Image (cartoon, rainbow, N blue to C red; front, side):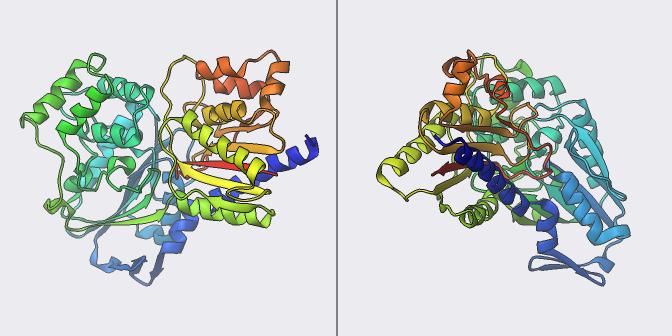
Length: 445
């Protein structure tokens, strides 16, 4: 292998990632879809006459919340009456009119609970002459935690951790979260009615389902208590969940607790949603960057879901096919995919789905010349670590062996972080203040 070519490819993979990231910068996206002329606020094809409102509130939650709030401040300035947006610790920006509340993610904490209570109270003070700009992005489910009556924060924490550890999909996790919440699953919209709500949304879920992104605080919920119990049975979580959670869901199935607001509920009459960015926007920009670097580029036409190791095997198989058969394209080739995989924890190591993707890939592409994989979260964090993901290439497994590290062992223990840390192959961006799922970049020369 030519080490100079390999090093250049590793840098190119990072450049491609950052090009995708720039395309989903929340401030850029809001500036593109929102404008103001005199008293008229325009969001895509909708207009709002600000002179009709006596109050303008900015509420929201998510990892992209600080950037979204700063863009809205630049747009509305001192027209904002009050604002509160809940963000992950460290994901902040200096603001003048909107308060940022920092809270725990992915497991909710007391700060998130207190902030969610304040958020719901602010919404409850709105009337028919109030305009609420609701800023929603991925991570909002954990950050905006408000247990339903009869449940404690600890119940929510234990349930969230169990769902994460068992490899449940974000659709499954958020279906349950909505039914354990006092604010998600359309309940924020119900509290805010009869105010006018305009929701600006960054999607971090496959399919861009508005009811799943941050558990749809202002969206009609198609899920049911019965579906929650079906997920729990399928995942074998019944004996592990807090008794209060099982009792709450059971009471819901029996009709003793009202269902989440559904389509046709008057709470949604004045609610509009605007999807301002998703993973495909990032992939398109990443693909253009790859082409300028001389790569034949293919964006996989479907989001990547399921077990991380299976996804890594698929990408490695594509690399082998490109090298051996020149299909689906001849090198230099760039395969791009987005999505959100899951990891079923079997060990007690440190890492995240993107680091595990890179580690599984390293084993599959071992010895292949001039093949590089970068897998990273667009939010800048992977699992509970400070890395966004990791880089792997055809020399990764061999370099690890020279250090006395067995890749197979680290993979079996879900312990990718120390593995890549020893190789100096962790990919760290710091908080990006955006969030549109993960990007997987495969380069072959």
